[in-house]
Image 1: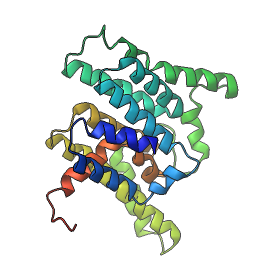
Image 2 (image 1 turned 90 degrees about the vertical axis):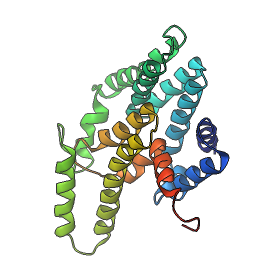
Image 3 (image 1 turned 60 degrees about the horizontal axis):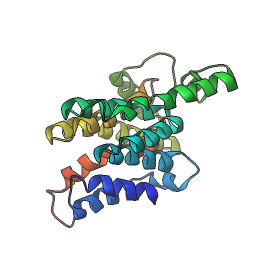
Length: 238
């Protein structure tokens, strides 16, 4: 609930109340939105990133730092918020002296890496331990076209089983959320939002799989804004 409230307040900085509610509606009917009620980090992370963006946009830079710091502790991808803020600082010529606090956001990731070093002896355990999750993950970087090719091969060689349903959902999310930030560029969405949406999508795929991607993209709030803008011109009943 708190995540949705922050998301709504963030949306209202740019959009009407009706459109903002429409974006939230799309988020809540997304096929895997039930994860917001599960014991996963999605709802917490969404609250923190929306709070961070809201406080940054309203020039409450200390609170933007607090929420951004906690977002980095919740997920390593939270550090993307920092780069998004740097983009806005450059584009909108926000004085560095005023926005000083947001430059400390990466301390959240550094703190987490120190914790991993002390607890398991590997500051990059969040990356290296992905290899034990399943054989779909690989060491190194796998390019996006390679991941698409792999999924097409799986589709062509998998019988009608529950696995096929999962593969279809992961591939659909992979293609859609790759395309949305590109479409958003032509719809004049803020570059900081586009950066967060695109790289927040791309980073989980670099080990060669869309595994769990439908869950990961739940927190990419700019993509749901773009999706709502695409649907808006359609007939009202749709």
